Image (cartoon, rainbow, N blue to C red; front, side, top):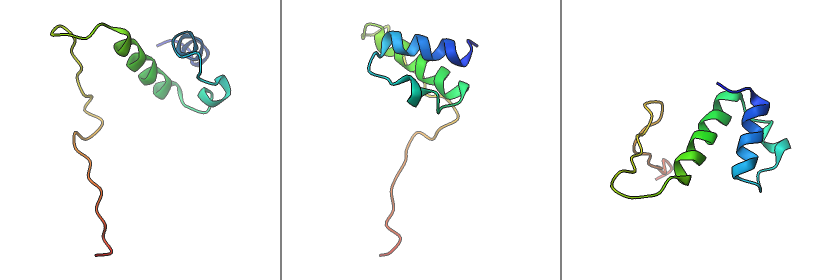
Length: 68
């Protein structure tokens, strides 16, 4: 995995509006995940374009109002 500073540099090459100081507040794994996400977004869409959800998040999230 690239270092945190390398990830920030690579992210800023793709997303020039990302503030370096803001990116520094994230850990290395979060930056790596975001960088991978940006790379996937840069690929052409179509039948060959595949996105696989990682197992570390749920597929469906719901908001419940418990005060009712």
